[in-house]
Length: 456
Image 1: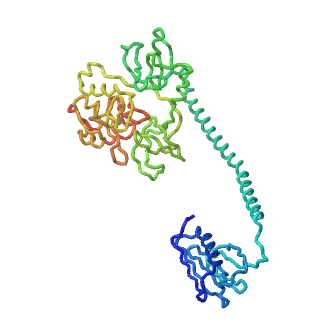
Image 2 (image 1 turned 30 degrees about the vertical axis):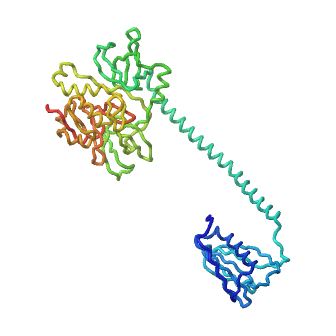
Image 3 (image 1 turned 90 degrees about the horizontal axis):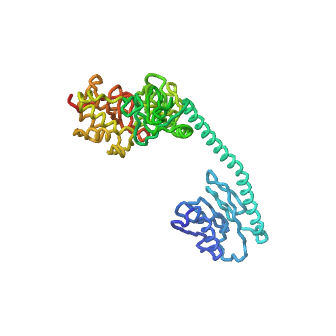
């Protein structure tokens, strides 16, 4: 409510007479009662409605009318006044009350003169009525309380049900392992070798929380023979959790992923077949879920998101498996020295963190920061921006692509991600905050450009 009005103007025209003392007092009461109703300036005006000089006060702004003030100076009759509040009218109308015409406009408050013999309701009666109303209000609130409690219990039950469902789904993810092992390597990776020795050929790599089945223990417990996805090999037992610890870690590490059930699936900007296609994903990769919608799933693609149709995909909790990777033999490295050096140097940071805008290979980089810092190590300099890197190098075709070349990806025609080709259809890149620096298929999403910074 407004605590004061802009202006009060009182005009009194009743045969030239001024307001009496009582009239002024009553007018003051009226103003006090109406001040909270006014939306702006309040104007009080009166006019003769009958020949006996009975007057009417019109209150503008609040759209209220006060009637039946006597302008006579002889007002010491002790008249009492009561207030009646009428329902707002759609249009201005007039009613007859005795010899006094009362004008009603909008919200109407009518003050009518009553005889001294007509007494007002006692204060205690009014108090009782107020108390009763207040009691009814409390009763209503009290009656509503069980509904609120029921709603709260229902919400809690739904939340608990979702928690139980999620735990069951996570449990299903670890039940596929008969003797689970979990790699614990922090921001690094664990080599999977052909033989239980540090001299054994590297056939794959496992990053933190990657899962495997332990097939047997060898070399006096120093090595485990494992199966992880399609990879079979040996890992140092020092970096593998087993037993109940592995199961608990597996429950925590399981992630909700989209599995593609078709060779390729369109990724759209909105959850609608009418929205734009901004890339495609393939069945070689699993993609992190942002949210599930009616008939659609929003997935994370590097630092962006998109929507895939639920018709061609499946959502479930899974654990990561080993990534196949075999470094070049030293003889081949010498033959392709610079390209191999670039790839091997990049691979040293596999598993490290993704940080948007970052330029530290150990503390965190983003995708273009990763390529920039790797190439900088070999005296090749480029901008820290994917769009610039894509034009700073020499464009080549897929058939010309070799190790160390850069692969670019786009959203809505704008390049927004880059990776380094490492051979065998794979690429290494700083993918996202969740994935960090990782290895994927080079075409895990549709490439739009390939660029070389190398002369050979």
